[in-house]
Length: 378
Image 1 (tube, rainbow, N blue to C red):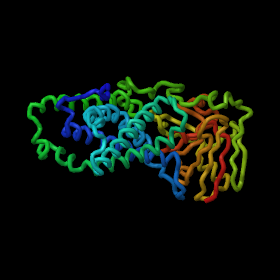
Image 2: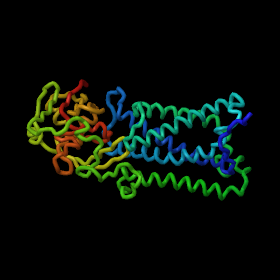
Image 3: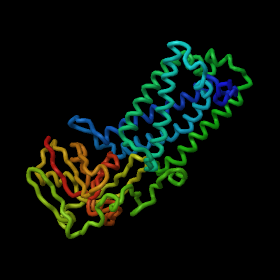
Image 4: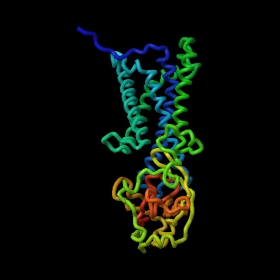
């Protein structure tokens, strides 16, 4: 009888609890930051039903939190690979289950490894807007975040004694490790830290513009695009095409409804605002916008003071055709129906003839090609 085939064996001295614990600390910190900022992003894109909604200030709040979310997720890639390398032999230990406690440990490891790899991989591909899977990214990514977090908590609870024994150089378990391994371990940990730092520095410039000259691995450069701003969805892709200036009408539906042409909009009081576009894929950049205050349009329509606004696009294809402005955003003086970008008329791909721009708001909700505003009840 042929012997049972075994996976490759890694007998190196650095496949040990101390190394795994150190890298696990770094990976855990990245996961926690990514999870918390991811929750902010999810609930800002899919607001709960509470009346007040999210605040409109700080102006760059979403830009910061989403930038941290993507940066921590990218940093987690080399950390996760290194963590899996350190524990690889134990993933294929035989027999697979030795006791009820060991079975619980194996369950936590299986859930954590599977969910973490899928979560990080799909998140990374999302930054490049590549979706080679049949499911919807957003709900699956959100659900996996909870699976990763729950299995991580379970794993830490099960492995707490071992983590405690190898948490620091002075821990009891660590003192028993061969002293000749110290140099090799420091070299490995330094290499892992440098790798995590390198992938972060060479991608974070897509949102942290002082480092934009170093964004060698980022899928987007914040300066590349029409009118100095990247474009995620073009007018053609959205089914809008070219909107005729003379044929455009903005309908504002409220207690006192009215319709405005583009000439009418240009004739209203104009305001300027420096606001960022912050996209869920991780890139962001501030831009100079000009247009009409949404609050002025609402006042003319007789909207109640606590009323929300539904913003409807002319686009015929793709998601986020409709978005809602909560009370804080609708009444914020910086929230504009923008007609200009950097002093120029909006390009079609940036939402000509009119688009929404508001502070502290995800880019997917900064609706382009606005054709209708509907005042909702308080």
